[in-house]
Amino acid sequence: MSAQNSAGIQTLLDAEREASKIVQKAREYRTKRVREARDEAKKEVDAYRKKKEEEFKKFEAEHTQGNKQAEDEANREADAKIEEIQAAGKKSQSKVVDDLLKAVLEVKPVPPSAA
Image 1 (spheres, rainbow, N blue to C red):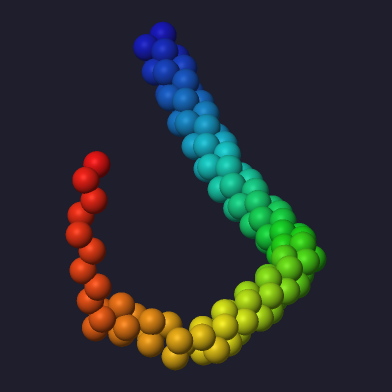
Image 2 (cartoon, rainbow, N blue to C red):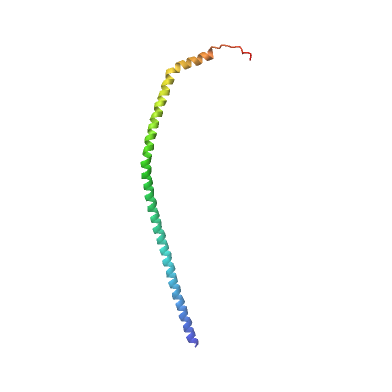
């Protein structure tokens, strides 16, 4: 009976070892599959991000073109105004300097008025 029990126990131990090997292989397979899925998902996310970045750049290029034209037009208008102001300043520059010098050098005292 003891030999039979010993053989049964040995069979159970062998079955347990075999089950442990199967579980270990399943864990390894699952771990491998999880890694593969993660890598695949990362590739998909990278491809999606690249696609969306390209779409954004295209959208930005199309819509900033109008802004660029408006900016150039505003710069031309500003340059024209600056030239106009500079021309007006040069035109009356000597008169302004003369008036300032005259106001500083010719003192005309005025008595205070009684209020």
